[in-house]
Image 1 (cartoon, rainbow, N blue to C red):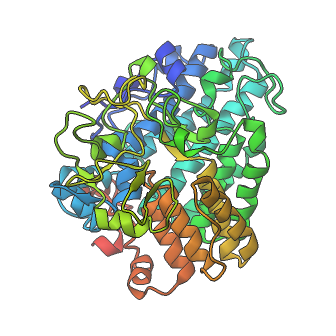
Image 2: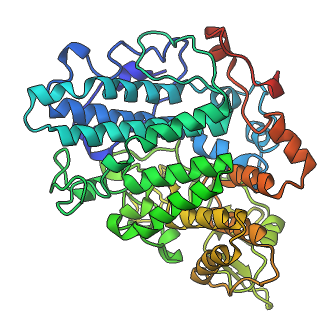
Image 3: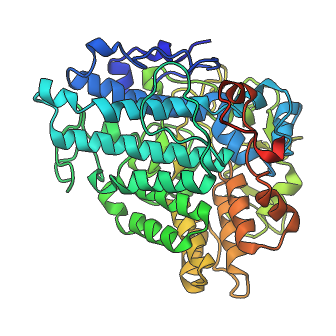
Length: 513
């Protein structure tokens, strides 16, 4: 097993990709991390190269935390979702909400330590990075302010991820050495409040684009040595920060704030080249497709660029959903049954999927629909992105996209709907429907249902389904069984037993005791 100490390497590969190679992490101590976490402290914080490798190292740890064992989808897409496991019982346990079984996958998913590795590295950067200003004239105070802002936004983002996954978790506000500190958990509301404050304290120090001379906050042709094409969709910019703020408040049910932050993203989208995505681009399988490489339209994402030899299997939904004839794998690990697909996409003209009155199937989300198991192929970026059908060696390079224009816009519609501003919510939903070949909503349709139905279709396979269900049920407040799950904290994961044994200040989630 490789641990954080093996992530000491720095250099051009890390700089170019904004990430580190995936590794499987399972260690008793603080991920067996050396006190320096990334490079030897005695030789660090001397020049701009140290800044670059350390900053990009934090991004790499974050990508790994989300990608390991396909965690992003395990947490967000499977539970009570559309997918059904073909033969893997561990996947079916997650789908069924049986999260305390002894499968290695579930044990790994219940372990939050890889997320705290991100927080610790970000705290270290915040504490030490200003030292470089004294040693390297290339690194200025305004650079440092923007870099620290990124670290605080990352902290806020990670605490949001922790809170929505585990509920009550510890808050670390400084860098620690050696083993995990024995800190008691804060309540989910306290954690979300802390996350929001971290982002609010620095959001105005973030640029709309990095490496752009016309940016109003950080006007420079090159940021850390590279132009904007290297950083688009890689680093947290101001719109990404506002998008996270919108999601934090939506999870808490603070929809007035949700609308405020999402409105800001939409109103300032042009400043960051954030655009809508047509269906051809969204489901494209070549290097012009939405999920290839890094681009401004990703808003907040984690790329796996093939040019840096970062094609992997973990960290891509394709490793779970693709199968022959698209790749050499005979059967997928999971699929969406035909009857489920038809029930979700139940309107004529939907270019994502529809069956017309003659029985003709139109689909951009599925392959082999007439077979035993439809293959979910909405996201399908195999190897180089120049040959989307070459699956002889199923390595994937698709970017893990947390949010994009359509997602944050539909979250905005959710906020309007929850606040009873029906016309505004309907206009947004109708806009998205029109872009996907559908007519306007029936005025009699419940607007909350309409928003979440559109999110269900538009964001399928992107890691939102479980969290959308939670927010939907909180708004509707009419499903006693689900509300009981919310009130008993059954919506959260159990805490890994090794984490509990290492910190006697922690307690198991009461639902899983």
